[in-house]
Image 1: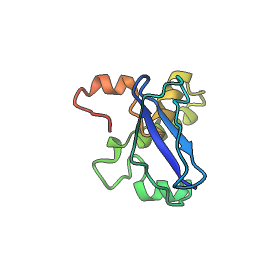
Image 2: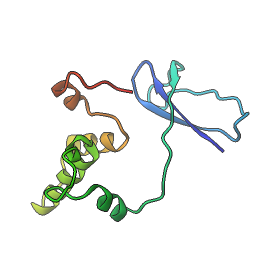
Image 3: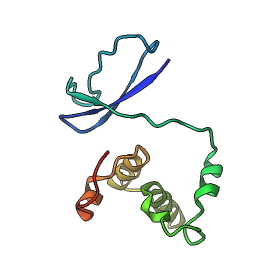
Length: 121
């Protein structure tokens, strides 16, 4: 039972479509804007890991082994979440939105503006 991913050509959002079988016809529409103008993406695949396992694999800020640690927006999100928690503050909704977008592999618009050479897949 495959799950296919598409990018909407109108709103640029990612949409997942569940199919009963590989031979099932796919009638995909954007879950955000309802558009039928979709381009199929090469889907990522999952490997079962716990949150602790993911953190151990990538290291923690200040103790990371790779200079590319902060090139992954998910690591920046983890750092931001931990800093807000340490300060006893709630994460503002716009920051939460950027962190969640990074976890979905979408670069937040404000970061795209800072890095004009960053291209979407």
